[in-house]
Length: 89
Image (tube, rainbow, N blue to C red; front, side, top):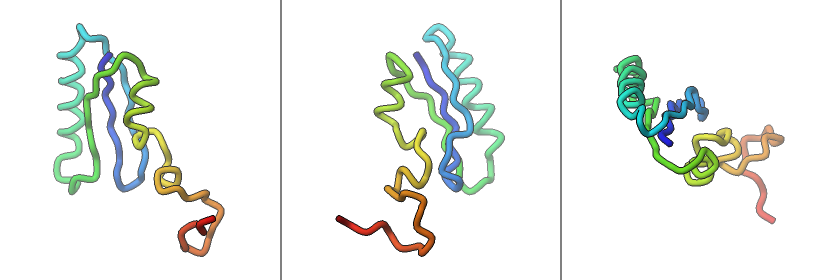
């Protein structure tokens, strides 16, 4: 399987997640180019990648940052409003 991911770095979230069969590689590459051209001049705030794996579960495990919220990636529970990092235990 081929997976197309469009990730907004500024917002810390996946904007597009699409699966393609191996025989649809050309379509996946065309879609990647289409999305990238829409982000020209945005200062590099978006990543558009094609990844290959046997399943979505593998991609979610090996590239988890594309599927976590920014808070999850940083290890923040979202409950603190002080702006301080979470206390270590």
